[in-house]
Length: 270
Image 1 (cartoon, rainbow, N blue to C red):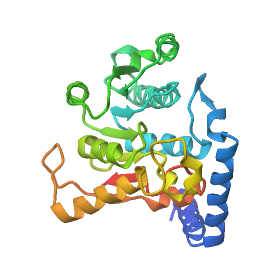
Image 2: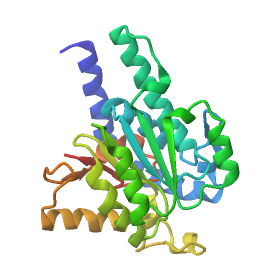
Image 3: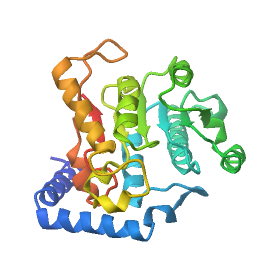
Image 4: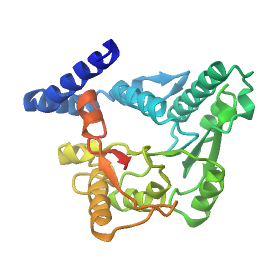
């Protein structure tokens, strides 16, 4: 066993230990709950744009993109655009590493790697900030409901010619909307890549914490994930590539992070 393999085994043991420690996970859940009172997740930026994620989840994005090496990331929900910029910057890093390894001259604007962002309302100031951002050449913006037929048709058009696709779902958090998104977007996920459903932790919050939102306990992204996974098990569906459509909830990532907004939300296509 190499030193790298030894350290990887050591890390796996750390994660397994954390995942088996109910007190530690419970403490993490309490921390997440209390952090919401301070709007903690809104305090961070990525390359200058607000990302609205807890930092641990941004680490997950970085690790997933690096390990899965997608050439297309599709994101529903844009807000200030920080998540789009993060995905775009990671794809740009993949481009750079590929160029170094092959000895080719890097032409950033010719890369096939792109991010497609969908939002029902791309506000003018956010669009202007994204238009001025250095990562803009890797970002495609689509305005409209992520589950509307014409909008999804535009998304499908952008998938043409791409071999590895990853999905991030972070728009309307009601059960019905997220389930509809999963029905449309999850089948686009490439085998070995992820469809990540953000903010599944709503299910674990006290009901009163979502009193001003159309979603809450029993009606949220996690309940949609559970319903979708049950349907896959019962119906034997096919992916867009014709292969069996199967996902597993990656608890290793969740236990590694310990603090995450998305328990049961990291869906890996297998």
